[in-house]
Image 1 (cartoon, rainbow, N blue to C red):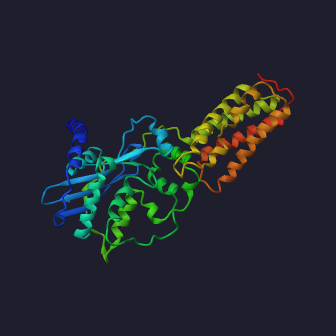
Image 2 (cartoon, rainbow, N blue to C red; image 1 turned 60 degrees about the horizontal axis):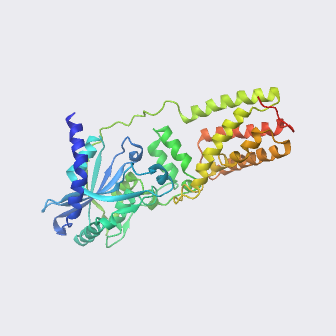
Image 3 (cartoon, rainbow, N blue to C red; image 1 turned 90 degrees about the vertical axis):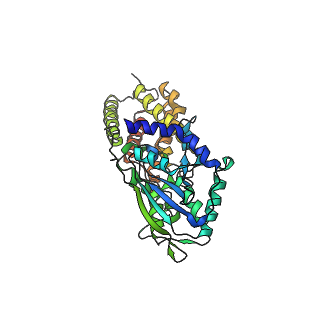
Length: 393
């Protein structure tokens, strides 16, 4: 109970403390300064499942010890989820006392690893000035992008881009991963989280990525920094575990998995197809359910074509779920003529086949492929059973 009260007090005081810290000038007495990369272990919230990165600026003489955090946002922003999908989310940088930063992560049971950088006084001075400039109110907000411009890449760039020499990373071994495979390593315990992300991520998420692009993940950056060379010596001088991770990530999500939901759909669809085939007629209620569901989901995928996120805008799943069924739903219910009805079902069926071809370029969840297959079978059955005037129950 005392721990929870302390956490609430910290959260209430944090905005005030940040304003005070940001208003101070960063001390440039570089002989007494240590600059470190902070890597935080994953948390339970969906946005914390990949860990976090921050910078520590510690002046041992003046006592100025702050954490610079590029991951500040508010989920209470209007249309936050939609803004996130369309690449319109704004994050900001903030600074807080190091003990407050550690208190927050201690409450959440998350670990924090510090890598003290082995850099020159001139490097420290340049980084300190850059941090001071970045903390000015007019420079704090930035347009967030999960893969290309997030809290980890911002921290990396603040350090690496203000060094006087180039940082040399070890050459990675094996095949290059993709963005999708990288995040799958971190969310495999969360089936629905992984499923949701796979629904949103398109073709570009399955392209091979370079080592620098892999550093959007906090632990990848930590690992690369640990092996990096700068001016002929290791970039990291010391490594400390400031907090050991205490929380055990337990999957408390819905016990019904995406694949289980797909199997339920298969059972329903199989029953309806058997009945329709035996009675030689389609049922308008089942048609309406399928076409409305596919069409409404398709509207979302159509809107995603305009996303500013390059890994979201082009998604093969739009071939399975698109607004097309909404256009011929009324005609289907109103018993259109065979020729006119057939052409719509043929178009939708062709798009679904095109989507299956697209799996050569994009990894699509098995549950989605199962649903798409039975939507295709439904189209085929419609084409076969269509009559000049269909009978509906």
